[in-house]
Image 1 (tube, rainbow, N blue to C red):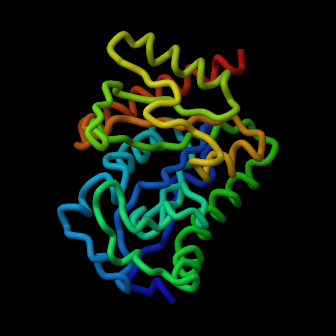
Image 2 (spheres, helix red, strand yellow):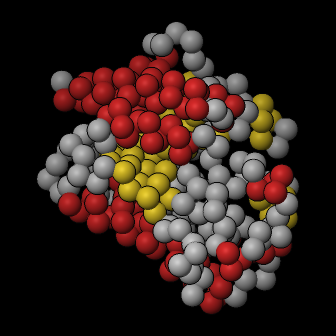
Length: 251
């Protein structure tokens, strides 16, 4: 077994029976590495970078869940162990190199090694999301996937403070992009700094698109939410704007 009694659960659920139409997920909220895997051969300085987790997004999601009275599902383990927003069969799910950093503990993984991580971490996380969504059948639901991004990636500067990613739910994305731009102090990415597609993402295509649910993926620049003050401020902003977006859909 990969996880023992000394290791935390792979999933945290906040407010499982909450009344809000908003349903939050955070695929990259955690930075834990199972004790059996040591440090994956990655120095502490690298494990504190964005390659290991979405910096700040756990705090934003926790605050946002409280402000909205919304269910939130957060993943506990580092995406260096397994990226829960990637199909487990993709090389990027357990990368041998992340950005420019070698991940020795991911080199030469056997099929059994990979399956062990899937069964211990990936499957329980996604099964919990699916079960909670099943319980909401017949209720209006907007799945909002929470992520953060780096100001600079491989030497390329990213000037936007926030990005809205979407697949098939263009109407909701348009509402949210317009609301964010209406704030007057933001540069907003539209399917930037990443595009959301079935070839690049797992969670939204699997849990929202296949169910026909309204959906958004929110990307917040990490330097803006690296501390508790920023996390609280952005949660308050998105609580207000997601409420307005939900009302606009109903109107």
